[in-house]
Image (tube, rainbow, N blue to C red; front, top):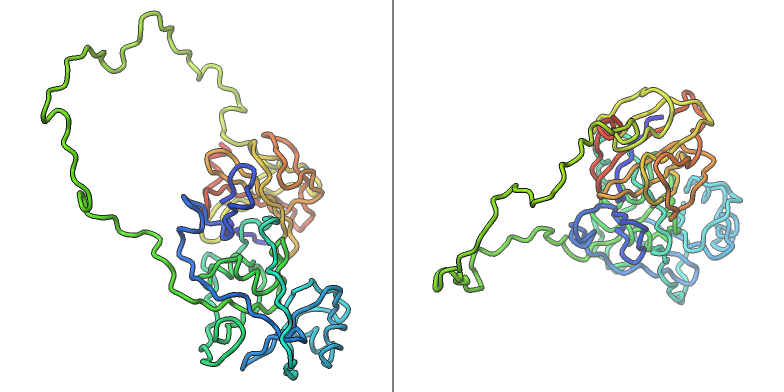
Length: 381
């Protein structure tokens, strides 16, 4: 199991995560997502009275509260086995309210539009962690020519995207240059932003070009007068100065910190699991290290911080993200029997869970700053 976690950061989580200012694309940096190139998108499309979104090339059905694949299919007069197969589900699988399913055929449009439901409130549940990818490059989005006709959601037929193994909502949003929040609202995703392999998502229709994230600065002096330095009109007064580096009288000598340095303080972070490195860091193929460890052995926080996110990838591998000072985040993938929850403060060396069973069993560990992965070894040595 090769894990490469891209970032929500994924993704910027600051201290104890402030959900009102959560960076939905986990891109980090000053100002968060607002300064990144993200296209504006149309409002969420409104389905008809049967909960169906109709486009020239396909139809999507919106689940109601308490729906299963079977009940939704019966309401639309469709074969439940066909609907389930078309969406990588089972006939009796429960559906989340607002979830969209791709219909295997077309149904007649309802005469009256249904009242628009409120957008999914995903702000309160910022549990999605850094993205996991299988290679260094994001898969190119499947393009489809826009259909110039009146359709729900901006006048164009949205592109469909079938979720592949290892993809997350954040990866897909970045691939299409849209915000993860818009993708979640259009598709009725839950608070954990969970998607499944084989699921069909509709990509929000862009309504404008992406903003320039780095506007060119004005030429020096343009738009404002250059101030006249005080010394140009009046000499500065004489003052007595002390050469740099001169110690004030009575200052004691600085202690030699090297003589009192211990093993714990010699490295910035503690080893998160007991074992050997079975796969090293490579920015393209493994954006962390894999530590071979016995299943059930302790997984510990590499440094003190706050549990910023707990989630699972499409393979149901559990992922924990801890936010530290200095803008650093550590990522732990393959953790079972969690002993912490989102928002908890943890100390260096505190146990957060145990190593997940596998062949072989190992912990995948990453150090990140924003979306950039860093080689963990310098922080552990």
